[in-house]
Length: 346
Ligand SMILES: [Zn+2]
Image: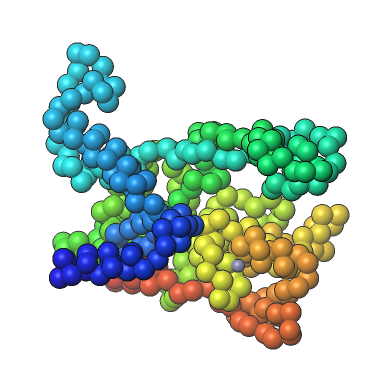
C-alpha cells in the first residue's frame, strides 16, 4: 500500500508543471492546530518540504546530541555533563515547543519621499529609474532598496507576552485540591486549556507554575456556565475579563468561531463616560467578547445586539434585519464539578 501510494503521488506530481507545484506549496504554507478530547493537542506545519525537512533535521540533531551526551555544541558549560533520560521524540517536541518564534519581515522606510511617479510597491511609491523607456534592472534595484528584510523575534517584553501569549487554564476547585470523590482518576473532573479538556493531573500540575495568577470563577451548578458578578468602572477588572472569556468561549455573534481569548470586550449598552450612572454598566451582564471584525461592525451600527435581562440571551440583528439568538455555551465540565460538590455535602 505504501509503495502504491508513493507511486500515485509521483504520478500526480508529473501531471502538474513545476511552477504550479512550487507556487501551490509555497502559497499554502500554514500552521494548524487541533485539539482532541483527553488533552492531546496536534500541531501541523504545512509548507515546502525542504523547510520541513530542515526543521526536522535541526530538532533531531539537537535531540541526538543530548542522547549521545554531546553537551558542547548545545552550550552546556565545561565541567557539566548531560544527565537527561528523555527519548528522541520527547526531546524533539520539547525543543520545538520551547523555541522562540523568529523570522524575517519585509519592511519599508517610513520617511516621506519626494518622488511622485507612481509605481506602487506595497504602500510605498517607487519611481521608475528611467520613466521614458523603463529600465527594469534599475527599477528593481530601487524597489529592493525601498523594501528591505528585517529580522524579527517573538517579543520577550513581559507586558506583550501577558497580552498575546496568554493561555487560560481552568481547574475545578475539587481537582485542584485533589479532593476527588473516589480513588480512581476517572472520577476527577478534568481541567481546560483555552476551553480544550486536559487531564485532572495535567491541570493540577500547570496551576501555580511559572508566571501564573489564580482567579476564582463561580459557575452555575445546573449548566456549568459562569455566573456574573458586578463592577461599576469602565476599566474591566482582570477577573471579570477571565470570567467573561470562560463564560462565552467564542465571539458572541452566532456562527463566529473566533476564540474569546483574543476577543475584545464590548459594552452591549454603551458606557456613558460623562455620567456612568446613565450608561450601560461594566458588568458581566453588559459585557461580552467580540472578535475585532464583529466589534467594528457593531461600532459601525451594521450589527446590533440587545440582551434580555431575564434570560441573559443576546439578540443579534443582522444588516438585512434578520435576528439571531446567542446564549453562553453549556459547560459539561462545570456541571460534573457541581455534581461532585453536591456529593461531598451529602
Ligand atoms: Zn466574531
